[in-house]
Length: 140
Ligand code: CMP
Image (tube, rainbow, N blue to C red; front, top):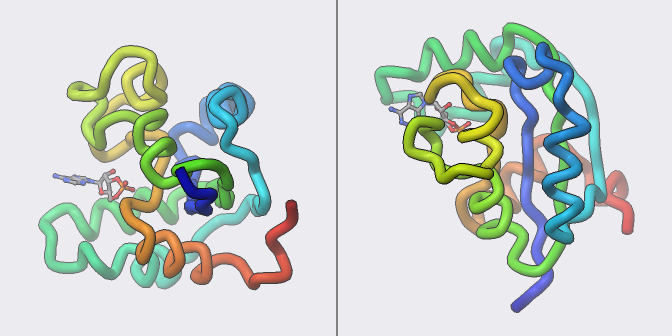
């Protein structure tokens, strides 16, 4: 096992439900520690840039619109195998396919409003962390 960092975003649907404490508690109980955090309201252009990899997908416009519709909490999580562990804790992208006990099964409504985002691989994590945070903003 190796110590990794991954990017986590609590999305506007979960922010509106005031469940950030529940979500962060799930990370901390699983030894994923928050080493950077910022609450922000993404502009349309920031959301477009962040999700650029999906620009050709049919859901891109809705995704950008949703992610810029309200505040988000952007975090860097650190821990052993943080990238895979975060994805396990989140559950499948579509809450209807997510295992019971995962964030998306317990707290999300739909594939569009699925409560959280997490980096899917080491290279993506590096890129996504650098998108939001300067190296000196990470502590721990
Ligand atoms: P996220 O992990 O933030 O990455 C891209 C997002 O696009 C994804 O979560 C979903 O919320 C959203 N999305 C909407 N439709 C789809 C789809 N068919 N496949 C994958 N992601 C989708």
